Image 1 (cartoon, rainbow, N blue to C red):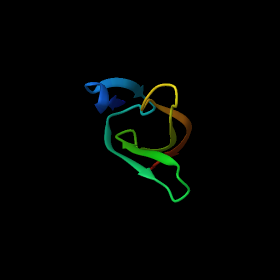
Image 2 (cartoon, rainbow, N blue to C red):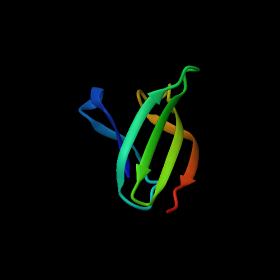
Image 3 (cartoon, one colour):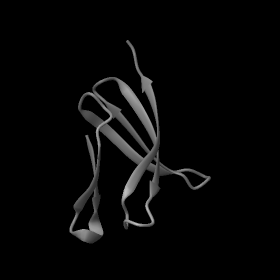
Image 4 (cartoon, helix red, strand yellow):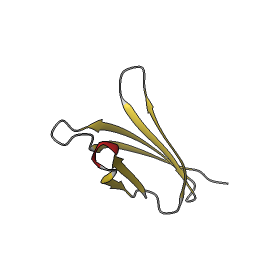
Length: 75
């Protein structure tokens, strides 16, 4: 699971993402050249997840997943 917190509201949790079936050992948020915000995560379930995120205008800093691509790694 990945928990998203709002540092401006005493680090209250605003969202939980639970797409992986195992523990997550790496996650990174990047901004692309075209302005998209992406969350890339890798888990013990041998999967890489690429998410396109957007910041909600109605809820300050609430991150909503709008698209998720899944890649399964094999031995």
